[in-house]
Each structure stands twice: as structure tokens, then as C-alpha cells.
Length: 230
Image (cartoon, rainbow, N blue to C red; front, side, top):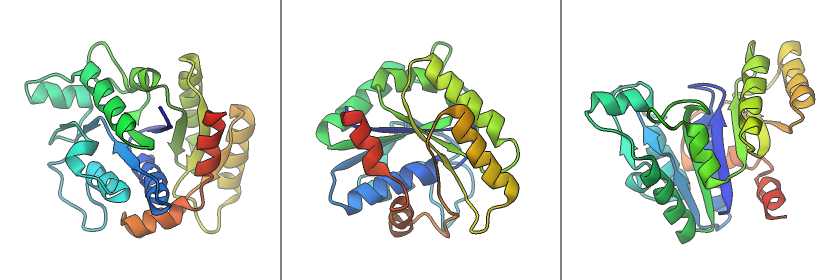
């Protein structure tokens, strides 16, 4: 399977911006890209005209249908396992794995995005990390640039490597145009202590495919994919 899995240090850490930027820049280069997010929650929340729900943003970035991106969708803005429980159902882990593999088989590259962080439960027996292990994709970790990010990011790297996962990079976002001394130190510290490549993405005005592709050109996506190919 050729692709990348974007996780985050937490909810709201910028996963969708990173995943959308990767998908959009690859699509703009003529690649057949599939976007995948196993579960979407929070669809009951008020819509933001500039930032559609995650599966719709990823679908537009990759040029596919939203239904194909997210097999399971829920209204409440809660953890996937609780969203399923409130809806009177359960999340079919094996079904999610099969859906992702099918998308990967039909396209050149699969860009998958998790839900929250690596240890977010999908049910009593599985987490997002288990899904990444099953898919065997390298991780790109989205993280905030500010205070607290060193601990959150290094914990995420430890959780990933403890499961044998390959980490391609950390992406700090939104990265300010004029970063502070602390933000620059955070970037350097994560790179050194985490033994990982650290990239950045700026704050985007909207989640349009054009904006995302422009941001994605700042990322060494081809290097991440080529490293896996070797």
C-alpha cells in the first residue's frame, strides 16, 4: 500500500489541514489520490463556510466523493466509540480496514487521516493506532507549535514507535510568519529529542483545494513517499 497516515497529538492539532494539503498537492500533480478518514464526528455542529467538515474537505482536496472518504459519520462531537454508542451501533474495525485497502487498490496513493490522537478508541478492542498498524502506512504527525507541544509530540512518537510504526515527519501548524523564540525552540527540540524531521505549515485562510495545494507545496511529500518505496 502506497500512502501516508496523518495522525495528531490531540483533537484540533491540524490533522485535516495537513492531510488535505498532502492530498491536494498530489492531486494537482496528476496523481490518483484516495482520501480516507475512518470516522467523522461532530456533524451536528454549525458549519463554517470556509472550513467544511473533515470528510468533505478531504474529498474536495482529492477530487472524490465525501461518502467514499468516511465510511462512518456521526453527529455529536465526541470520541468515535461514544458517538457509535449514542447512535446505537458499533464501529466495524475490520470493515474500516477493508474500506481503506479497497481505496488504496483503486488509486496510486492513499492519504488517510485519523480521529484525534493515536490512542483514541474505535471501540472496546481497537484504537486508531491499531488501524495504522493494519494499514502499514508511515505516519505524519500534526502538532501545535506552542507551549505544551514538546511533551504531546514526543509522547505520540513513543506511542507510534512502540507499535513498530514508521514516522515520516512531524508538521507544526499553524506556523506563524514570525515565530517566537519558544516556537523555534519547540521545533528544534522535537527534532532532536524525537529524532524526526520537523516541517511547518502556515495558517490557511480557508480549506479550499487551491489553498491546500499551495500549502502542500511547502511539504516534502515526494520525499516521504519515496523513502517508503525504498
